[in-house]
Length: 236
Image (cartoon, rainbow, N blue to C red; front, side, top):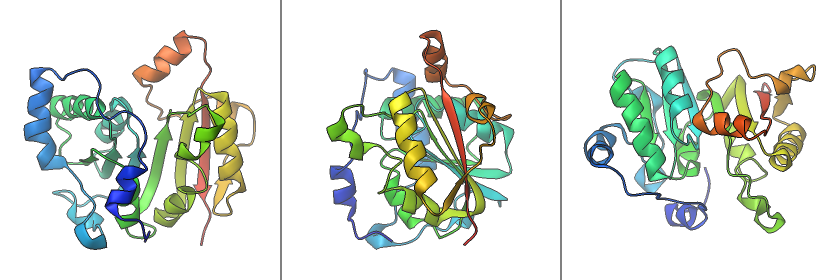
């Protein structure tokens, strides 16, 4: 468990929290649907019990950090109803977009939403409780003085390594080459992770169950080439 308090977490959370004003239906989803699905870190440094998160038992738990507009999270949840999902995203417009997907596809049974920083949630989950984690198209923070704000790095890789099961997959993606080099260097060097790449196509071609997001489509249309990095959590 980390010694940081929730207030310290919030103080270190960078990026936008709100965008354009929400339309009426999205506002109603935030007010009515989100409270039924919202996952907050337990008060006083308590632990989250994954078995209590969903109305029916799930065979595994997957976590997406920074789910953006929620397209990937929603489609993964729809394709894997026997898996429980936790999605963390502080940008409220993205949260509202995910809630629209949940409502339209009736996904309330296997998604829980943290509309805030992912770090307190990761710290509250039991060790070796997560079967897969996604960090997709995160903010690259291109200025060198902001590099420590990148989610994948020395501060958060130990968090991910702690909660991931032996053999679990950490899936990363970006269209920013500087961020790609940064993530690859730090994750490849971390003793708890093994890069699952044997050939160039392994990072140029998305996994078989990949879900393309609107952001990724815009990147492709703009001529930016995404990179897909898959790591395995080494056995303890």
